[in-house]
Image: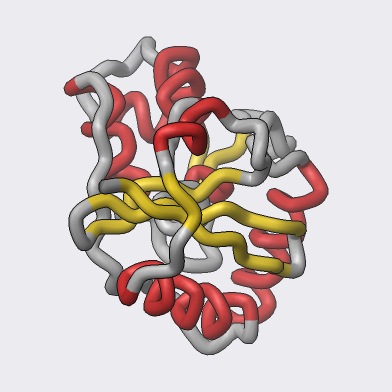
Length: 156
């Protein structure tokens, strides 16, 4: 069974999903089609995820410990694992990630994998920026991306 709960954050309402004891979803909209597979009920994993988010937004948590479950293509999962290696308060480019996943010309493919990231914030796709240093696409919007980056840089 898949369960979800809501979490009111400084970047807006978030929807957290759990499947079999793993965090499997964090999305910014109740209209996200992936959320339709979940039933609303707070579980121990979701409660723990909310506590970790509280600590993160308070500037007290730099890494997450909640077990994650992602499902994607082999390439997407490689990208998502690489995103988790970006240090708190740091950024890197799509090109950097493409090189790290052995796809040096795959900046756009990395961008598409970021777009499909099922667990935003916990898998920190907000830490990926364009090669010219500009903020580009983020599921929660550019204001949310900017907020998360500034939060981390202030507390790094």
